[in-house]
Length: 335
Image 1 (tube, helix red, strand yellow):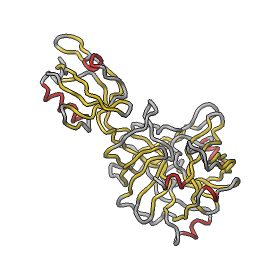
Image 2: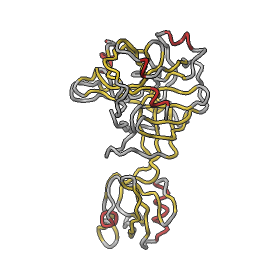
Image 3: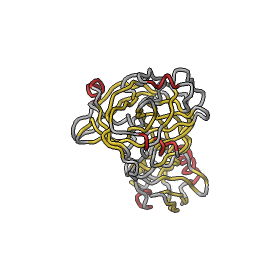
């Protein structure tokens, strides 16, 4: 569950809303500082340029050409500039290629966190008459995960609990990224040896939050124009207060509403440098029946013990989908 699982759905992404609490958390609503999450969120993340997902050939008047391949471009490269002009979208790149008129241009390309200049000659495609370089590209990434908390005073949120990575497992850099309401419409159950996943649909094209930062502990941003009236408020507790024993997680595995599910905390490791501060086991028979345990898309599900938010679900054990890891909430709040 380290990677955010990407989906292509109509207008995708999901963030849910309200939770019927089944613990003593509701009684503390008046004094809490954080709205409890558990809602599934749809994230549309700007890639910060035109990311190459594959190389292709161009059928030009002079024959089959492969400008990108000959220039040394590779899948995973992100084109973020052309002749000193910023490239943020596919449209920007197409316009830059059109301006070239087939003459050599200099692209600014980011690879493994470092930028380099690449000289390339676009060629005119025989059929369309457009100048191309032989790449398949994308400028946005989409997927679903779970919101862990929303800060009451500022509307700032934390989600996922682990890094958002591309297929090469490199930490993504995002720009102009949005969060949308989403509904869970199905579940691929987890089984031993294969992680399950939630299947979600974005409900509309109006974002309810903006994503601003990704790092090793999750994805962060700010909610906008959001109705918190049915959200519960909770206090947070440091790892020092977490104990082995019963707890609950809040997740949305059907529709848009989070539910509470029983788990057991089997281990607390405050000093773990990989953010694996908890080993947890799902004990709730209803959740096991519905999902098989922890599945992709549940990353970020808040862990509550003794009425306080102590962490979030982050990973599943492939050899046992009822077990997984969690991160301490103080590490997320610190971001």
